[in-house]
Length: 364
Image 1 (cartoon, rainbow, N blue to C red):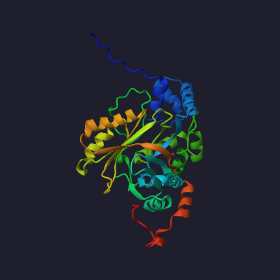
Image 2 (spheres, helix red, strand yellow):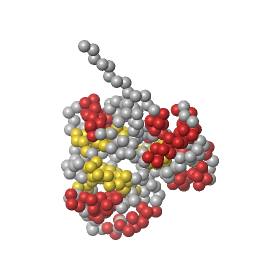
Image 3 (cartoon, one colour):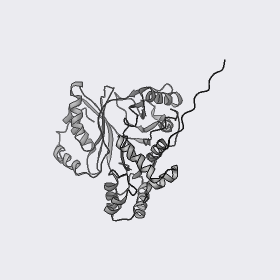
Image 4 (spheres, helix red, strand yellow):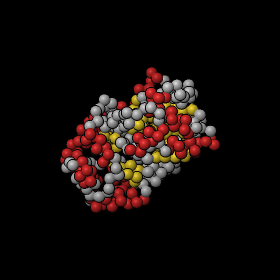
C-alpha cells in the first residue's frame, strides 16, 4: 500500500507577493510603486491597479508612516478594566470618545474591556486613565504599560503557506527606541503629513513634499534620520484584519518568572506569527508578565499559533488565551490633534487643583 505525498502549497500569486511586500516598507522615492514593481517583476501600472482593487475591496485600510509613540515623547499604555456586563457597552462608548484611545475591545475574561491610550509629553497619562475609570463606571482599572518591547510589527502572511512556528527576526524592539530624543519642529510637521493616508498614485509623496517645502530627496534624508532615532519605523500598508481574512485574534498571556522574562520573551518574539510581544507589570489578580498577540483566519489557527509557542519555548508555564468578542474601536493614533487638548481641557482637573479629591482607589 502506498501513501500519497502531502500536497505542496500553491505558489503565491503576484497579488499575494505584493500584499506581503507592502507590509514591510514602501520606499520614500519619487515613484515607489515603480521601484516595488521592478522588485517583484510587475509594471508600475499593475502594482497601482492591484492596490486600488485591494483598497476598493476594503482589505487595505491605509498607506502611511508608522511612528513610535515613546520616541516621540508620548506616554502610552494598554489598559485592562472590569465592568458589570450591563454597563460594558456604555462604558466602552465613553472610553471611545477619548481622542487618545486607538483600540478598544471586549475580551473573554473578568477584565472584560481592553484599550490602548496615548497622551502627549506634557499630559498626565494616569490622570487620563483615572478620569476614564470614573466617567465610564469601571469597577477596576489596571494600567499595563510596556516595560520592555520584544517585538511590534503586524505582517500577515497573505499566501497561507507559512508554518505556525515559522521564525523571523523582530524589526522593532526596545533597543530601537531613543526615549531621550528631542522632537524638532520639522519632525512634528513630518509626522503631521506622513500620518495621513497617502494616495495610491504614481507619486504619492508629492503633497507631503509640498507641505514640508522639501524635495523628495530631502524628505527621504529626514526620514532616514528619524528612523535612526527610532521615531519613524516605516511607511507601509495597513490592512483591515477581518477583511484580509484574519478574523480571529488571540492574546497569549504568560506567567513567566521574572528571572526568565528576557530569555523567553525574546524567544516568543522570534515567532513570525507573533505581531506584538511585551513585558508588562503584574498585579495581585493578574500574574502574567509576557503578552503575545497572534492573528488567524480561524480560531483553530490562532490558538494553534499560541500552542506552537507553548510547546517550543513555554511548556508548563501558566498561561491564558484572551480573544476579542467585540471590537469597539480600532483607528490609527493621530499625533498633535487639537481634539485631544479639547477633551483634556473639558475633563482633566489640573493636578494642583485635585488635592485630596482624586480617587486613586481601584483605578491605578
